[in-house]
Image 1 (cartoon, rainbow, N blue to C red):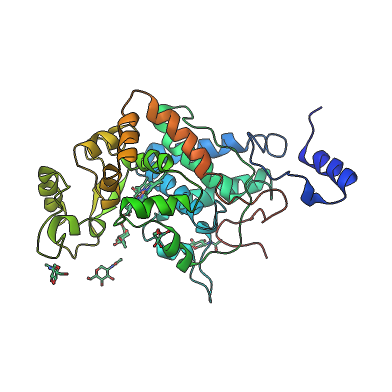
Image 2: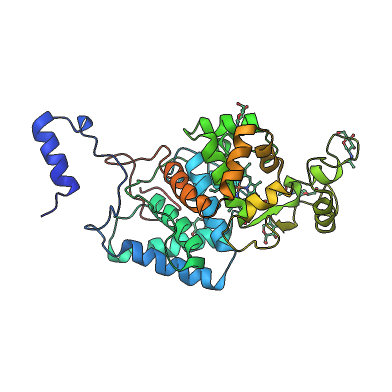
Length: 326
Ligand code: HEM
Ligand SMILES: *[C@@H]1O[C@H](CO)[C@@H](O)[C@H](O)[C@H]1NC(C)=O
Ligand SMILES: *[C@@H]1O[C@H](CO)[C@@H](O)[C@H](O)[C@H]1NC(C)=O
Ligand SMILES: *[C@@H]1O[C@H](CO)[C@@H](O)[C@H](O)[C@H]1NC(C)=O
Ligand SMILES: *[C@@H]1O[C@H](CO)[C@@H](O)[C@H](O)[C@H]1NC(C)=O
Ligand SMILES: *[C@@H]1O[C@H](CO)[C@@H](O)[C@H](O)[C@H]1NC(C)=O
């Protein structure tokens, strides 16, 4: 018979008397195999059903997982709604997508019926990111360890303070990733996520219209691409139009982010910044080697998915992802 977490804890308690000595709090493969064996399958099926009719969703979920992990660790704090006296992280991320949150709620409601109080919202977010992106391949393209638990605090101010800005330089990005325990390698590899999805004009239109305050454009931006972007973003004030970050294949998870980047067609300053450092730029080249990006992305996602996780007895398993248990 396999040893369950509780057997393990019991042995720990008997031997050492304190749970703190026992490092039961690691993420692991298939955490729910005994407590809710169908969990991962249920999540995948619901996510795939939605992605089949909404091809924008993979980008929403991938970004959702990134934002969740960078603020208070991967604890689903991003899913919490604001309350009368607290503005939640959500409020700092306009258009992270209503559809994304709705789908997570649907998954959660389903799991609460079959395995009440068992599967964390934080794990659902991590799996939704993997499964939505994987739909295109009809198989999982990275492994997700599970066993995360949910946090109870969500503050708009913390999202603003922890989510890297698209106007960042390389040194800023390096420092922002390093403060989460991630390397320059992770920074470059994970930026490859910008092979899917869209960006709002106001995050890059300074590069088109007024880069140094003289009505100029960013010299590090491909001029043909800049001309194209100007046809989409008609002025510096446009904060509603969105443009595909990888125009030729914005729905396909592939290496084209790095191909574009080399042609100076990265959308944000933070993308272009990766070419301003020799080490980072070498990693960009490496990602163009066949198959490299996929294996490296899987590794870096594992590290990102482990940032500040609550495990063991920390946190809780929320019953509804939008509110803490009462
Ligand atoms: C390196 C620092 C990063 C910066 C500065 C950054 C910035 C941004 C910005 C400004 C947008 C556009 C949002 C909008 O206009 O609605 C965006 C979109 C996106 N980001 Fe990043 N990002 C970074 C890293 C990441 C990472 C690590 C991931 C995931 C692993 C990621 C995944 C995405 C995705 C998938 C989208 C498209 C979202 C959509 O289509 O709605 N980004 N990012
Ligand atoms: C968010 O999306 C909605 C619907 O697509 C749009 O009307 C609204 O302007 C967007 N908000 C922002 C801040 O981009
Ligand atoms: C990123 O790093 C810079 C430089 O260390 C720092 O000033 C900034 O606050 C950081 N931003 C985020 C979002 O972590
Ligand atoms: C461009 O930037 C300069 C300096 O910040 C500012 O004075 C000018 O008004 C800007 N131009 C436009 C069109 O916003
Ligand atoms: C977009 O710009 C308009 C007018 O400049 C402003 O009223 C609105 O608050 C802005 N929306 C966002 C989400 O920044
Ligand atoms: C959170 O807010 C959204 C949108 O305002 C709402 O649809 C959802 O039901 C709320 N969730 C909870 C658990 O209250």
